[in-house]
Length: 422
Image (cartoon, rainbow, N blue to C red; front, side, top):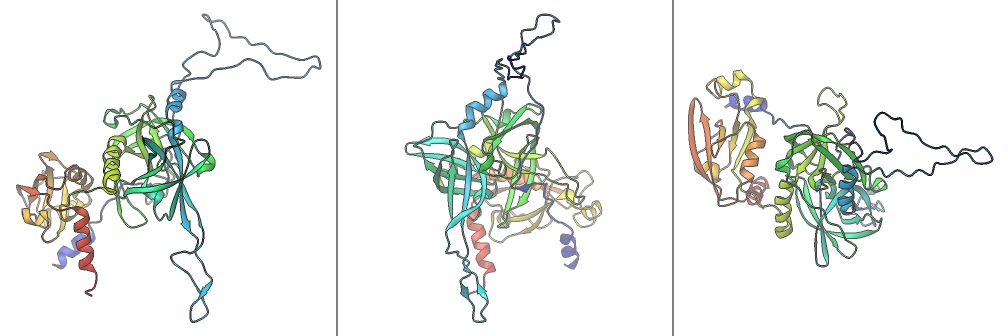
């Protein structure tokens, strides 16, 4: 047994870089859609210089209409981009403990003040209400919320629902002043290298509606981290080099048609371990994933996901020696997900899955890491079934798992087991 425990101490869950709160960097500029001067052949463009009677230089009266595909895209959606202000209570130190030391009132009995700021996107107008999508980490710890609109006015916002796993949240605001709502584009149709434009409030509402431009650097990047509440955040993200900074979180990543293709969420500021500074590596939650989540947040205030009932680690994080000596895998198996433990009375246990089983396929599709496994699991609904192919030692097996348990219920039960008996 000690051999097993020592083995799992070396497991570790490899988290892909993603520091919540920051975001992306400037890419190439687009050429203007028109010419600034009338050039014929190789003729050199000319301008006129005006000097007044006092021989003083004056500003030229030549007007340039510098429009481009980028400016047109921004115009379509810019009015739907807002700043989200997280209000929290000030703490009072007026009380003293029995030793005369200041005693902090943890609930805070002072006025609500701005604790942090982020960005958001107005995506829906329904009667007297309008809906805003932002990041969960933008609204964490809030005691009140405000949204600053494009014209600089502020309105109170109501928190509709949050989902820590995808780092998304939905707010509701009065629709009276709302004229523009954003349109979501199809993130599944994106191409690496196509233009990407980020809009948000870097460093807060002082720089609201800042626009930066870059490209789609990569697709389907697994980005995992842990938020301040200790909850796992896992995103199959769009990578972009459009400049994003703290405060851009929750803002829009748009395509050249002005459609929202992602909600900006995180960036890599430095390389883990080496401390080397990193530029232009930001990540956005794909729009197709956003739409699926916000529909549930509007309806239920949370996302209901099925639970498998296991803890797991990526096979890639385990040494080849351990794979051979402890897992007894055939040499042909070089990727997958290792089951660290199986909770009792869960779908995994009922299907016969055991510790050290190595999952390699879900519904016949190859699974190389835990991010892909979660994505496959969370595409299911409670009540669905899922076919799991795995190796137990050198034997390949397949079982059907009935996903009968709600993840949140399983988490509550596990938490209650950890609490002392009353």
